[in-house]
Length: 428
Image (tube, rainbow, N blue to C red; front, side, top):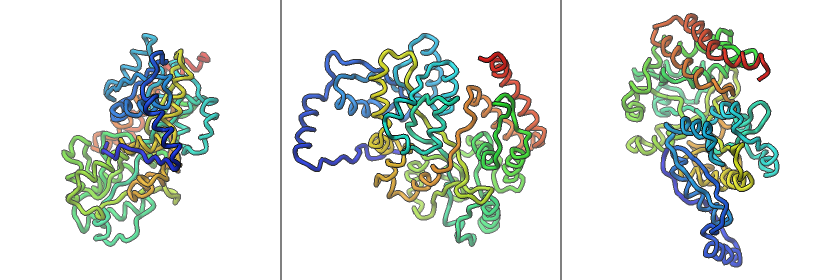
């Protein structure tokens, strides 16, 4: 993720307050010798800045010392499972939102609903991230940041093709991409065929639920999913999207810059990346927009991805650990995390900060925040998502007929969910 200014905007309007802050800093900048130790694991870019964030918390709470362990995302899932098996989960840990259901099934997470209610911040959060943190009616984490998908597009290529008004429906986008291809000769939309997100977004926008019978069976033969899948494949059939994986496009930014494709559906990390890597392209030549829809609503639904902070059910330091979670998820720290990493805040107040409110391209993500849905909240979701990607790729390459691919997907997902059915039938 891109670098941002590493300081949040803090003002001290009165001199006595400033002097008091100085005294606290000088006398309380280090945790007390007998401070309670809270262990905190954070991953990826967040792990790289967690120590800095925790330092501010310690200055405000000298009776608590935070022991931070940064972990690469590639190792995070296995390390968490190993810690759980050994009874050594940290007090506070970051969880990708699609992992919450898995650790809920292990009974590894504390229900924080009552504590969260007492913060008075519930109304500040967007519904999508909050929903992602709730499994079977229990709030098992607090949203830390949001990772969703919107459109990044070449405004200049659309305008050159006579598309003066940005389309708000997928059918209009499809027609616009035909006009761009007729003038420019390359592709319209880049849809990496090895990714599950776009087929799932299209399906959610069509009203498909993906799984049926209480998430016991796949529902990929439902007319809503079939319609979404057909629209996804139409981009490849009509040569408006290259049937290529993300790895086959050697340099995404160079290809976007030279107009190999006009638009792509991607996430917030690319705001910083595009600005750095497309420095030679006029900033007005490209822009962002919330997702179109099929039904005339705007924006269309996107995914409520991202990460949340969880409190270990087995922690013996729950009060101190909750203080850390409450601090890290407060609006000022949401803003600070954005400035440090580019992570999008899950709360409305943080979006009023000038760093976000004054950024036109970031504001497309703000508009998208009002239409987010999480994928099915079950432990098996990531395995299912990988199978969606696999069969979507086969169908996009023409290696399987669309209906045959969906039938095979449905059968495989039913096998993945076999243990879930067995447990539910026995009331477990």
